Length: 54
Image 1: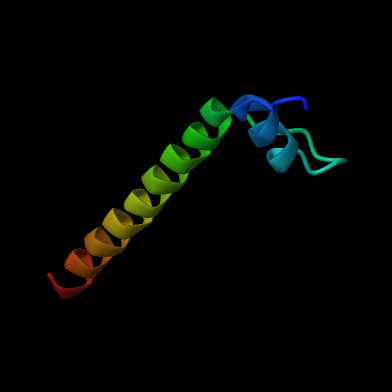
Image 2: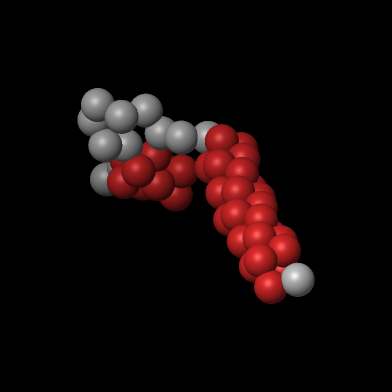
């Protein structure tokens, strides 16, 4: 009986056929960009509200 290593199980479970697995660096970069974009939109809205009522 052949033993399957943990990495083979993870690789098999994560592979979805047509799509290539994304690198964790790419996912982290997209997450940071999204967080920065949301933060920028929030601060622009705050500045616009301050200018409107000032």
